[in-house]
Length: 434
Image (cartoon, rainbow, N blue to C red; front, side, top):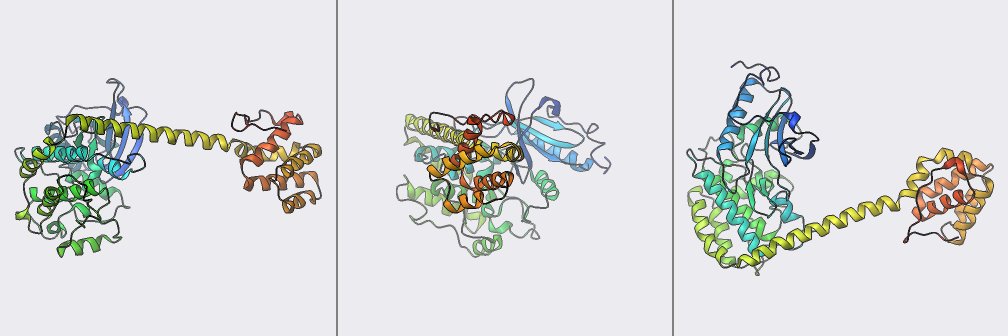
């Protein structure tokens, strides 16, 4: 295989993965950009279901493209209930992408830190999430050969319609390296993960340590802390180097009741899992199998109905929050319609507003105490009609929607037909009476 640019080699390099042409993914909608490239959502033209596309933009060396395809084939073999399924590959001359199922509930990070959308997350559901993460990573570690994640974090733990875990972005070291090299804006960090979830033995890339399952268990310990506290790890620290220094010296996140509430069921077990998982000596960290054995009896203490009710509560909270957001956006648009119309028709209003209409507008604004005496004098002392109207509109820009509505109403009352169509500014809540 030659090392030429991948633009010419995309068709020649084959993959065992199902090929999904980009033409089957119309109307791509950008979702995010991260360490593994750009993530977009689309509806597959034939399957009629939503999918996600994670892609690297720009030219690729044939050798890199081949390596990435091999990496994707390994991921495709990891088919398990709590692993994000890879549906196929989008192998185009201009980009390379992995197509996966679309997760409507986003990431665990969004669930934990979106407190406006999700004010409450039941303890039973938090334990189920932790248990399913452990199940997923334990499966990866038991593959032959073991598949290590090495970038486990709440951002790549996705949640399906019922808030079940789907682990993403595992075993994608080459993919991450190439993506980071394409994005100059990314902060340079040691290879193999995000700094707050990274064990101290991996901080120095010059020290070639053997890839180990103990990396993932350290990350899991940080995730347990984050799930139970609903705080960002090291959120008060600005400089990543400060985190690296503190952790390498044995310092860890706060385990007091300030961070981990005394209300947490089985709190002692949680702290035990965290402390053993982030042990300074990697050999002292437990396996994921041991974590599962510890978590299973805890999960059995929660009623299945309680977990279902917790999921329903999250769905209801999300629906209410989204409805409020839509209402707020529509209300904001509606509330600003008069101001926006005046700004868009400014020169025409200056040209066409009659002296009578101007005077009626000033009288109406004064009677409603919307126009200050100083502003009135500034307008009325202008030498010409056009300069008066211009000053009135300048004042309107800073006075709000009600001010603008009165001007529009007076234009309509005076039959200034050259300015039609007028915006609909009359509603039950915003009706004007003159």
